[in-house]
Image 1 (cartoon, protein in one colour):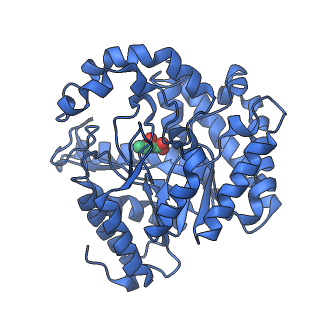
Image 2: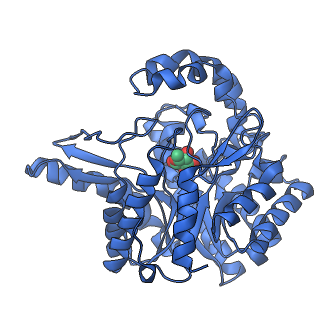
Length: 418
Ligand code: FCB
């Protein structure tokens, strides 16, 4: 990776990202309940969903096993976080995005678990000791069972419970926190959970999905105001998934459709939250090539999950969002499922190039957090997709630093001049 130090600001955040339910293990929330109910049927449908993947033979046994769909001990990060943070430090990271698990902190409505709060306080203090900036996420797709039984984010009047939880966490951990992400990928959550029905509560209603999305927008705005009223040092954002849409030919229809898709995806949410964002948190995974009304990707490089890999297009996402919203940007997720670690190094190299070009174009880019620090439970796909810089053996919980991660660490070391 040819990197010129000067292109990245000296205080650039270099690190990785995780979410509580995907790595901690032994959580009890609406996802845990749903996994146990759906593991068998997800395993039975695996062949139908994944048989066309190039790596089907490699993942078949896992994908057809119901255990794959139960998070269980996941990567046991709740118990092993010290080791994981030390590994992040050894890779020269200076930032880590993580989420706090609401169901641990408030297992029953209105009652706080002091041990869980103490755990996250120690977690943040461990990060600080290792010179790692915590980037805190408050909602990353999981809620306590009691909250989902009350209708979750589908009911606007339930927002107050989330805001109360957010206030509690910031009051308890706030001294060491600067960056706060209120909500992760609001549309992904609203549509997967309430329209496509792939995720709990499994609803299939466009109306419900739109209601949830609007409520999440309002939750962000109220939570951000509350956080800003606590202290002016906080920098708050929503983590916005942003794919890149481009026309596959110069037909007017393709050009207009790609523009409309980009607008629909980015701007519906962003224009409604931008006043309550101090920076933009951007999650980038893929691009869509648009012909007429449809997407048809080149599929030249494909990840283990069949996602078209176009890491260099990150540049265009960054440039568009920066031009339009005029805020600093932190990339809060970016990465690929690559169990053999054959493509991750290439992905990183292309991504670094895209960031350098965006910086040269004047984008105020402040950080890069790779998804993920370690192999994680990948929602309805379960454990076979491997996104980690650190490989996890789910039987022994042993961590291995992947080759690409070592290379990432070396490049960061060089850029940070350490
Ligand atoms: C994002 C999610 C994250 C992870 C990655 C692969 O949409 O925010 O939890 O699942 O995709």
